[in-house]
Image: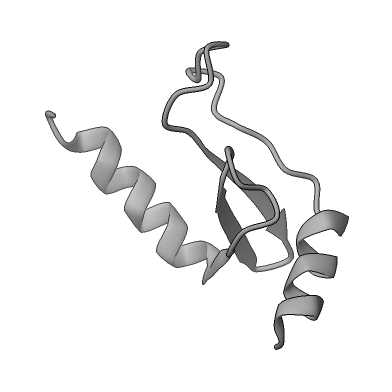
Length: 70
């Protein structure tokens, strides 16, 4: 995939932030789900790079992050 395809795909997705994200901006990521793939991007740079992983990998990450005591 080239950068143009990535940007086009990124713009066509339905992006959302966590309900725990504050209104002040901060350090947030946005995610979009398309089939069995979860796309992740920096909310401050929506035209920037997108990390795409299989939904099973994202689910494992969320379980890990939820169980971790930070």
